[in-house]
Length: 452
Image (cartoon, rainbow, N blue to C red):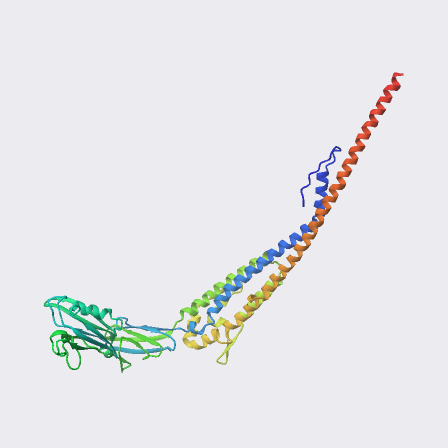
């Protein structure tokens, strides 16, 4: 609406005030439409709060829908100085006595002593093999020192699994070879083609030979497999990481000794999920109660939603031929509608029949899936909440159109009233001027008559 600024030209008539008052009266329908639009927007916001609260509640329900997460196996060792344990897919509840008789060893060899790391060893070629793989190195006079041979081994692109180092100790410098492959499969073999013509003697490059024919290197540590006894039965493995002996369980052997392996179900996730479910339900109820008293007062949608949630929480699920409810597993709702969780009840149920508990919550027709189906009816795109908010948004679009039409009419009305009252102002001004002229003439006539 334009700003009115047209006071009376000469009559003193308040054209501005009169037109403004009349237009304000005419604006009453627009104000009512704007109030309805504002109320709809507040209601849309209220439904948004419901949707957010339901989404948070759904996230906690989803934690109860994954059987793998709820029944995740946990492996533990009674003495982690002997071995540690971890459980993965396929691990079942178990308890075993395990004795580590012997750890797997990495094969280590050392050379004879030389004056220093730069002392010449010899030239020719070295073929070094580990675990069925090998590499061949050409050693010339320049690289045929302890340091040169060490660097050639460590930098080889096709190194099969041998680490070389040089140590300086009493008596001189020695070359150390260590297999990176544990167990008997990691035994190192060194074959030499010596430029001096004898590949097996301890002179020249053949001083590094270690094979069935010539063992010119000395063994520091044997290439031995790990040996353990599981419940009295021997198990031989090539390394200190042991998988598959107990299905789904991996052991990391640390030292010789005995310890008990325990594989159980992790109760922490299901306990945390049910506790979070109770907290989330209470937050949802708080949101619904607040909206029921304010933004969405009198809206039956809240009553229906509340009733359906309670109905779904109380729904029974058949497990092993028995009807079970969530209230048997520590979840409860008091007379005021406040949810809580008692971990002791869940622990007792898990101790009695853990599989039944998992089936109740995460089965195909279990508690979680039923609740998710009900929540999706509200939260899905085009669901019950979207239906409400979309309907209100559509009403607001119609209200905007009506407001725009009325505003255009008010603008026309304002101009029309302004024109009429401006004309009236001019007419009154002319009449006032005529009245003053007549008064003047009459006054002159009276003076004339009195002078005669």
